[in-house]
Length: 353
Image (cartoon, helix red, strand yellow):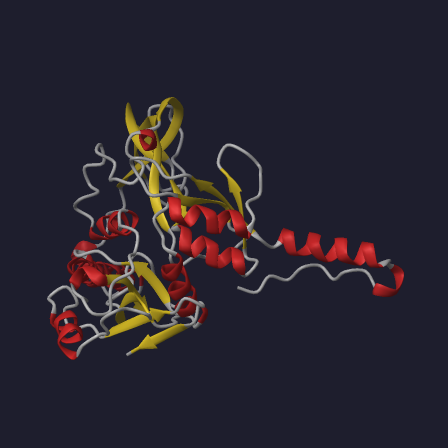
């Protein structure tokens, strides 16, 4: 994402100190802002996005934080479309005008609305921080975390250093990575099927707008219009305190929507692990990777381009053909290509295709 900052004053009119201050301030104004939430018994730590500065984060995920109860006033009206002067008379003796609505009924009810927030896993937040795109603060304070602070909390979030080095190596090449789970491939199939059905429904609406619709389905002149307005908010319930990384138990439609199930699966994904090159199996997978794509959608990303396993470059037993074949043939991959990322002690990353 290109961010255009206002041009700085001419260097000839500034001292060295003023030039450095202006450059730092301009860079800080284009950074997105996040807040690091320490690990707890319910989650492994994450970064909450507070200000995105117009950026979109393909690896972010949405989670419910609280809910409010709204008092809704629903008014049912009858819309009239008679021409001026040709309408029916109403009780007051006046003529109806075009698009005049008569109130038929009115009711008041309560509706529960869930409030969500955008989050990032720590490895993605650190990757963006290292490139000057994200400023991370500590939770419940405005203290800005340094690069040293973020590397220190990787261990608390159960993200090994080799995992981050492998992640940063692939992300620097433009790949989009999501944490691995056993149910991910099946969920992606459900999401793609749900997306195709939704596309058909959208196409039907487009055809209706273009006039390609049966005349029997056209609305009548006298049609009912339902208007809903929020009268007040009665209370707020913080559901994230008890279950920050789980589906909202009161949201009955969440489990019926594959896209919401996919978001929950990404949020609940365990931290990646470093495997032994000589003992690779299905549990050795760490990430699913997507090739660089400007049209990538978090709600319907499609099938990954390959799976990623991370291992130390130095091991007593190297990867054998049998161990690699067992990992490729596992049902979890479901035919996806495999890439093993080996990380040396010096930080050198080698990708084995």
